[in-house]
Each structure stands twice: as structure tokens, then as C-alpha cells.
Length: 64
Length: 536
Image 1 (cartoon, rainbow over the protein chains, first blue to last red):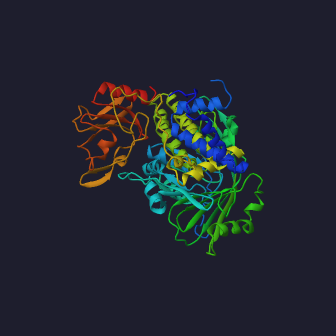
Image 2 (cartoon, chains in turn yellow, purple):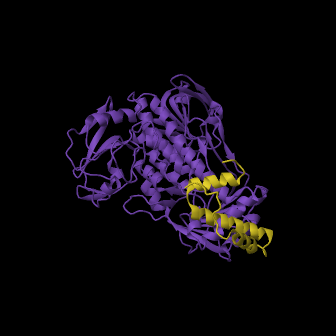
Image 3 (cartoon, rainbow over the protein chains, first blue to last red):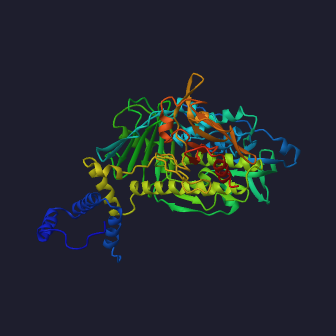
């Protein structure tokens, strides 16, 4: 399962607002903790090691 | 002296060799009478090899040190005659609890599979294990155990090594076909051969305390991350025998190792952990820091390295002594065949091949646990805490919690001694895995498979009559054992674990590992696999 880097989220503006809103009242530390939990939850949902590896590489700023 | 244990003082005896001033040539000299050196000597003796053990001290391990022994090392200890005693004295356990701050994050159960002689894990103070091994050695005419013998020099020739040894009577020289360095993490012999010993060094300090107390806590492993009684650090509580409990506190790199060892510093930490005014007595305290590293080659000429002298891991996961016993398990039979001229010297090189592979696996697991327990950056710490936080309510996060991945044997799946499968098999057994135990029955008595397979190579045949009773390559022979004739597979577990059908044939190494297997008994194939398993 290759990493899907094409637009894939319906209501993208709505999603983005939901993400930002969810941390609006948090301290920086709380938000960072939430981000860590979110990454772990989503990574587990994806599960596929190859896809996760590609995402980690891409997010780390390395060309795929 | 400990409250629960009196250390034996073993007598120094001047050897005839030193008295006469004439160096003798020993087949094997083991340097170091710690658990690995003692196991090495017992393993060699069980195979009929004479050996001499030199130790620079005259007692067993001071302090409980290594605590947890896993099933496979217990099977090895059973093969060399001390396993049953260890299990009888030790504390069997299977449940581990992991706490994060003031809550139970999750708990695991080792879920030991029934139908094995040895339990999944026991806790036992190291000095008991060493005492049992010393007693077994005293009863063996093949082992010459010499206390207060310190090795101070090493010379190597093509076919032997020369050691300079210092005793209360002065210095003498001795020779050995093979020297096994079991002289621990700070191995002197390792420096003498000029070996590299590299890896990770962790900037953290831990306090270990053994206490004696009467407590109704269950025999479980309790591990805390960031508990209220020891903020921002980890802690561990584990039961040993004689009402001795092992406590472990992470202190951080800035802790002063001298100050932190003082009872006035240690006792309040323990009181905070126990959370009440219960009575306890402090038995032994140590401050340690650790590294995960291994020697570049397990063999330097005629010197072979085993145990901590060859690899050092963090204590999380109990991978130190456990993997050391697997070193001696791997080495003893190879030495026997090479010493007897029944196998080429290359067989000794497979010791490095197989055990360095296992050491790397242990180091990887140990380093991963350490990174989880002592995160190296704020972000790493945040992920760690997120895992622990999620683990309480989310099943997916629990496998990520890493308070030590408990020792399990590393199969030699890529070993050059294996003959790869040419027919399909299912199950855990593969060429290179250690043999699973199973209950068997013979002559009206219940027993265990691993106690029945003997010390040499064996051919295990399921349910058919073999055309021969032995298959040989040169001086090495493998005795045929027939399931259903020599013993009964009393609960059917052996056949299930070995995915056996009538005619299924396994070639088993002297260290109870699978060398090869087939669906039918073919003498030519067995002989070829036997040759391969001895590097011939």
C-alpha cells in the first residue's frame, strides 16, 4: 500500500479547522502530547510498515 | 555478610603445576568462575572434557546481581545438572504490571505454555546459582576449580595459549589448547587480545537494592514509569527467594554514585516506594550504569569469549546471564569435537557466527528497551508518555510499552551449520531453533523429551522403524531415537510441536538445536546434514 499523497480528505477545510480547534485551549506541552498520541493512533490505524516508513521519510524532509 | 545468606569461602590450594614449576598443557582453561565460567566448566565436564577454571576471587557473587532466568537457560542448566535445584529454590512468576504515574497502565502474562519441564521464568539470587554450580563442580572429577588464581598475562601460539597466573604463592605459567574468557564485562583477557568492545554507553545511573521483608505482594514484576514516589524516573520491584526483594531505581546521570549508596539516602526512597511503615532490612546496594556493546570477534586465536566478556546489555529484559548460558551451550560441544579431532577447527568459528548473531539480537532488544525507559530527548519522552497514557485504555498501545523485552533464545536461522528445509513444515521448529520440550513416557514413567535426547547428535524419527540405529560421519555419530518405540509421545504434544507425520525425521545437535529435517528417513541426507553441522 503506497503512501497516498494525493488529496484524500473530504471537507479538507473542515478537517483542518477541527485539528486546530482541538488544541486551541491547550498549553504547548498539552498540544505536543496530543500530537504524539494522534501520531500513534493514526500510525496504528495504517499499520502497513512500508507506508509508515515512507511517511516517516517524507515527514522528515527526505525526498522519497 | 547478608542476613539471609552466608557467603562460602573457598580454600586456595596451590596446584601441583605451580609447585613443580613445569607448565602443563590443559585441553581447556576457563578464566572466571562467575555463572558463565561455571556453566562452561559443567557443560564441558558433561561431555567428558577435562577443564581447569581459574578465578581471581574465592567466593560466589556478592549481592544478588543477575536475578531472572528464562526457560531456555533453565533447560541448559538442567542439561548440566543444576536446573531442578534452581527451579526448586527460585520464585516462578508470569505476571508483569506496568504503572504510569499513579495508575496501572497495563499488565502482561507470560502465559507459559503447558507441557514444558521448565517454567517460563524464575527469579533467583545469583549467589545461589553459583553455589549450586560450584557444588556440582566439586562432585566432578573432570573440573579443577582453582580459587585466588589471577591471570596476568597471555601469549598465543598456533595451537595453544600460554597464561601467566598469579596466586598467593607467586607467579607461574600454564598452557591450554583453548582458553575461554568468562571474566566479565571488564574482561582482562579482552584487553590482552586487543579486541574492540563497542556499542552504546548510556548516560544514566541506577540504584539496585535488595531488601528483606515479609510482604504479601504477589510474585509479579512491577515496573513504574514516573511514579509519585520517584518522579520523572523509573522503578522496579521483583521478588526473589528467602523474602528478598529486588528494587531498582533510575537516578539519572547527575546522581552522585557515592552519596546515593548511603543507607540514609536509600532507605527513604524505599519507604516512599513501599508507601507504609513496614519493616525491612537492607541487604545489598549497588549503583550501576550500563552499556550495550559487544566484542568484534568471539574468537582471538586460541582464546574464546563468552558471557559479559563478549557482550554487555542493559539489565532490562534479563538478557545478560541468560544469553551467556546460551554461549556456553553453543561452544561446549564444538570444542569437544574439535579437541577429539572429529571436526575441523572451522567448527569453532561457527561459535562467533551463531553467538554474535544472537548477541546483536539481544543488543537490539536491550537498546530499544533502554530508549523507552530512559528517553534521550523531550520529544522521545513525549512519545513514550503518550504510549503509556494510551495503553491504559487502548489495546493497540500496549505492545509498544517496553519495560524490557524478556529474554528469549535467538534462533540461528541463517547459520552455515543448518541444512535448509526442502519440504514444507509448519510450526515453531526450524533449522537453527532450539528444540521445544514436551512430555514423553517410557518404561512406565513420565519424563521430558529434552531429558531423553542425550548429549550427542541425535536423529529423531517419528513412528517408523529405522533401517539403521546410528548414522555417522567420520568419528561423529548420531543415535536414532524413535518416537513410539523408545518413548511415547504421551500427550501428542511432541508431534504437534515438531509438525510430525510418520517418517518425519529431525537431526538434532548436541546443544538441542535443530540442524535439519525431512519427511522421510534418508541415510544419505542425514549423513550430509551431519557433515554440514560439524563444518566438515
